[in-house]
Image 1 (cartoon, rainbow, N blue to C red):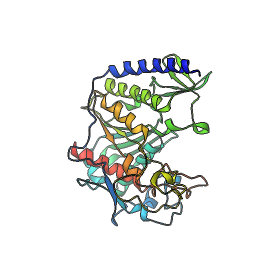
Image 2: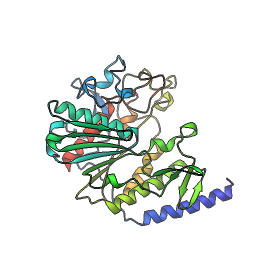
Image 3: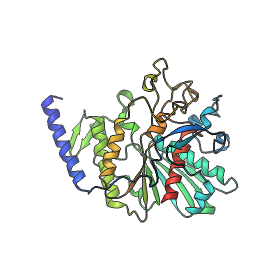
Image 4: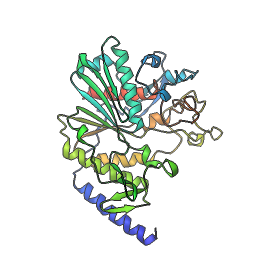
Length: 354
């Protein structure tokens, strides 16, 4: 693509993005009323974990680190502690009773599934004598507790916007949403999308971006991410009634593939890590997606609560499956039990505040 053509493409995309943004008025991102729950550190707590992963039937094989032979158990013993306040200790039975008759839905990529699996285990352990139903297909997992008329669902949808196979190839349509019917009427929606956007090479799952009727082979991935999130945000603003549905967005979850990122240049990746980074400061860079998410959410007319998990996951270089599950090295997903339990403790604390 020539420089002149690229400038023309970016100009067109910027116009589209401006139109999308101007279709809404500004609204501040909702945060904790009492303190910043997302600024803090990990503290050792021998009362953790909150459940036994060997007794939970909802964990993907690759994420059940104890079952897969991980011998150290330190990663199970850390609790997220905000700097200026305390989080409510998770009480699964209380959640089921307080939100009787409600349904929760996680929509996103495998990090959303990571959080769903954690919550499923936390609830199952809280009411071990309560009957449940569990239905799972390739892209959908549904756990229900009939006694409480409570359902928690995971829907796989890594980009939120449409990915369509056409004659030209795999086309990622940045301004198109078609799989939204299942989002309607849900009491609590927790969305996630980021990791698929940063893939390149053989991991990239699209051939072209599309905006309007124009195809782009090359486009800055964070620019594309912002256009797609703006499309999603417009749908929320146009279709969600805050009196009926509360919306959350799961923030950026960290990866640990390069020791240089946390000032350990002799360390290759998360393999063999057994303890978190001490303190409340991560020595490496923040993720570019964080600014994109906060920018889009701040321009929405409907309230969306950000679960800003970036820092707390950056500090947990020890919490990944690593090479225990298979020959591949996984330093992006999280052991269950483990770090995602804190995401659900944060969600629970926020729900109690509301």
